[in-house]
Image 1 (cartoon, rainbow, N blue to C red):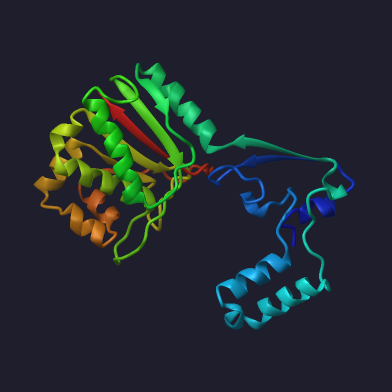
Image 2: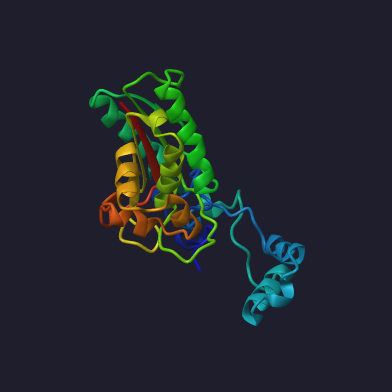
Length: 268
């Protein structure tokens, strides 16, 4: 294999330069593309300890258990570690990250006349819970108590997760937007002038043809006109069908890149 820095061992003694696009929150080089050109601090012993800790060693496929045992015994080589000479002439350059995408989005928003703030490029957690945080920021801003004055653009990025409870269709960005719409539904006046977007930079959100979805008081009005239930759609994890029915999906097609997700809150 070539993961875990083993590509560099094969390239040695050549000098190499890797131009890296990060689809990992936090841009940890060891995690991007399985760390082809970075040292791997983990060991076979670490992996074996995890199987013991979670009591899954007896459930491993025989082939996996054999490789793990051979690795611990040292009969097959471990991945190269920090300080290995194979990394002496290795250069890694991050040329695409979520932070860079947010910087570009900020520049664009400012050119359109919005006061803009980037919250973070490292959002993680349950999509519908993170939506509550951004909803609170939007409400405060509408009331004149926000972190930036209107008209403004609040940006964030990272990758949330969704705990599947239903059998619907959607993705983390569509669920994020649906949860935001649910917050708006509780008090639409508190979100006057607010528009929200959550989108995947690769153009692919879950097993759908959408990159994400939009939420706003206008979107909420359309949903109510169609008799759609936000709570029901959230319970079924069916954000795709919900937004598709009211024309509020973001469809970009494949973008041929991936630097995680971006959330945009515009407040007029």
